[in-house]
Length: 434
Image 1 (spheres, rainbow, N blue to C red):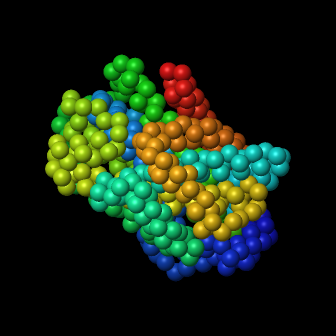
Image 2: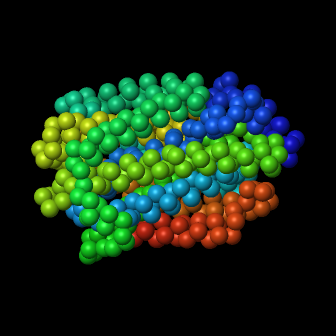
Image 3: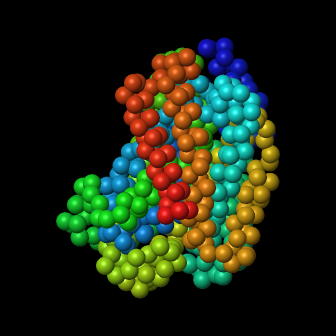
């Protein structure tokens, strides 16, 4: 195992000068002489990049609609979806730590070449669908906050996306800092929103008790849960952890995993709180007044019912979430292509190609919110393809060593996989035939 790890470290170092990958460190190099909480610092970051997928414009749409239509009723769904996301992202991070390879690389090495090629094709489609939602969300943010027409807003989004990409070229750590800053902006924006629209205490607390009110609430709950796990976040998280610090012994890998678990808990709890605040603010502002299923209407509603500053904060949060999640999609596409077919294209070319579909849609005058919804439908097809191999491989002791899933973890993971897959099939059926 040590010989294999050393070869991997040499390979990472040699490629780091030509890609966005950081130079790989051993566990001793990462820890150095750090003591106490400082030992955790080298491991903080990957989960924040992955967590961006859980506060993207698609989450905005479902949370705002759920809150406006049912008040705080579905807060418990947000909590459950966040717990599911924590487990799935934990497995993704763990497989990278245990193997020093990302999930796409393991699929390529363990399964037939044709399967790997198929995974790459569907992965690129998932990235395009992801970027469609994120890019449109960011353009909407510029449109709402600054009053720009959608076409200039889209061009400005493209420029900002390319500027953010320069941080990725310098390595994962600069990108992590930029992403963390953007997540912090979203947190600040919605923290002020919750003060402007304080929820009623009793209904708010009751929202954490599992319950429904009719078929529509079940459909919205399915939408929240079904959109929880994003396929690109699963592939990407394993790539971020396997390229960071390599443990040369089983004990070192267990220590790395414990540090990364803290990273996951912090990042995913923040993402969960943001989603809960989104739903709560929508509930306290719109419930009993109007049902919101359009982000532009939500922006004007916050300005009307609360104050103009509330609408601006909503737009700023949407803008920050859209730009950060769009950048993460480009990173995920790079990891997936390298893993599945062992090829790479320059990230600026990848970014430019991924921006073309949303630019075309915006220029054509298509409804932005409807495009967001359709992108989530496309993503539904890729969720099972990402979760199933993740659970299979993390349950295999020959692959994972001492970091193999416990039986209870495997059972929980398969249950979550079944729930998410069934919900997405249900949502697809409702979208096309309901």
